[in-house]
Image (cartoon, rainbow, N blue to C red):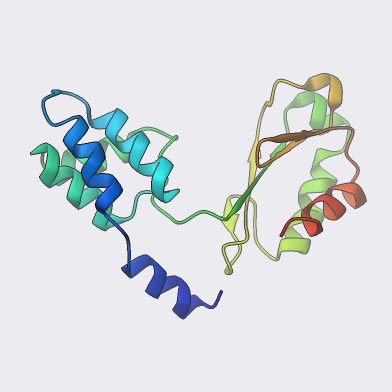
Length: 162
């Protein structure tokens, strides 16, 4: 997908599912967080247009919506990739070579950790514990745990993604 196509896709957001969520929560005070969570579940992130619609639909200031979104790490203000790759660099993973995996993945994807590829194929993140220390070094690729990694295997896993 070209950058232009991505912009056009973003401009054509279907807000109908969001309106259903707003209707569901219209009588619930203080339901901003669940509405934001459901909206992000639909769109994968929280575009400005979506946050503006939530503010209007819930009759709360847009600044309050932005305050919640920027306070909680679970919310994303930038579009994320179709595939989310989370590389653990906690103690067990780090001592077993996670740093080498991070370096090679940044080269493979041509982005820095924490960024998304320009074609929105993948978002690559470094996290500090996936709770699978016995599999170190470990990563989550979408919702799949991949353990006992070496840099070459991680590259192979990512190249196999659509």
